[in-house]
Amino acid sequence: MDKNLLTLYETLGEHHHDSDTYSWDIGNWKLNSKIQRIVDSVKLDSDGIHQASSPWEAAIFLANLQAREGFVILEDRLNIGQTIQTPKFKKIFRGQKAHYKDFEPSAWRNDAWIRAGVPPEAGANWLAAFALLMKLTTEHETNVSLQAWLYQGAAQHYQIPTELLDWTVDPFIAVWFAHWGTIKKGDRGRVFCVELENEDRAKIILPPPFVTRLIRQRGLFHYTSKANKAANHELYKRALTIEFPLAASWRIPQSLPYSRENELYRPDNFILDTRDAAKKIAQRIPHDYFQFLESDDEQLIITGIETARVTVLDDALNFLIGTYGKRFSLFNWEKMLGQWIVETNNYINWLCTLSSSTGQSLIVQQSVEKMETLNRDALYLYARWLREQAPAAVRAERGQFAQDLLERLRTRYPDMMTGQNGGGPLH
Image (cartoon, rainbow, N blue to C red; front, side, top):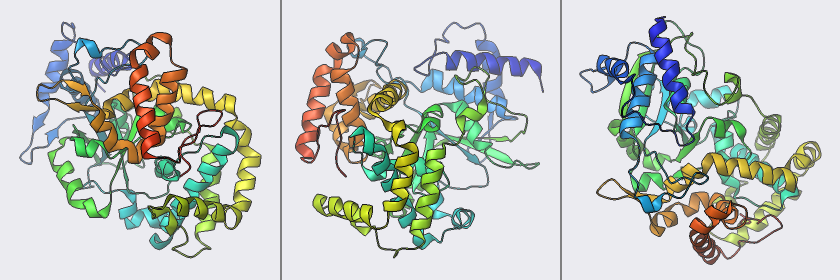
């Protein structure tokens, strides 16, 4: 391993991870010439794919790309202080093994179901039971009721196949994902970089507030379905792609804000136990049992959840509440929510923007409407935090935005209730 390359890689990583907005000023940086030499060494092949000679070069290429081209130009009046930042990134990254020739969620792949030990026809039950158990356990103490399917991001990271695609705003994490799993000699990885169009952006799902490793991976999820397979392929084709040989010796920069790399994937026993309990439930009930969750009838969903609670979910739910319930006390929930807000405010602000023709990011109401279906609970918690718990300067700056968002959510979703901690929607 070239020591000079490794030093440059670590230095670049340190500048990157020291910033809570994923950016740094490289305009007059003395290392620019060294970075540029690495960038120039990455050549396009005949298929339009950038080829790097190692994952270190690939990470440097991507971090440079993000710093120079991946940030929204903001008007001064949109700069709202250090605590709640306006969005500064507009590119997201996905890492995977090079042999995958498209963007295919795990639920579309037979090998994922074989590894999971659940037939695909029982998959919807497994995911629904998992999401409902997560929802009912966490809201037992907090009085915060989140949409059941918001927990699909957690399922995706705990070996339950879903129709979500993983993305991250951190290029180093994307290279790390390309290395995930067993690495054999000759294996190659790819990282895809895209700037989502507004219709794609509206399909982004945020990680739940308490799933720590998703937040540490700076992760986002793109909701898709087989009906949109062609759109997935178009996204795959328009992405900037860089390919590189995988290396068992490659590591994320030491400057990542966590002392050990395993903190990026350390398992959560609560989620593991929920996953296993949901798997047992899914294997013993009819395949269409949770079909009510797909209804547009709010009351039908509420009634269906209550029926499921006292019939198929009861034993597992009692075990989970008894074992983990206190973890979601109001005090602990507020602490987790505060950490989640700090980590994800860039995501939320970015999701609430549209890019103008000049490249400027304009905060507009219409884009919020497009994402409410997927993230209404996340937006609700965020707006409540902005209005009631944020620092005074932030409340003054974004207070009216928060109030307008809350009113729109309550108008659009009449079932939205206010509990002790700002309880969210019931479904």
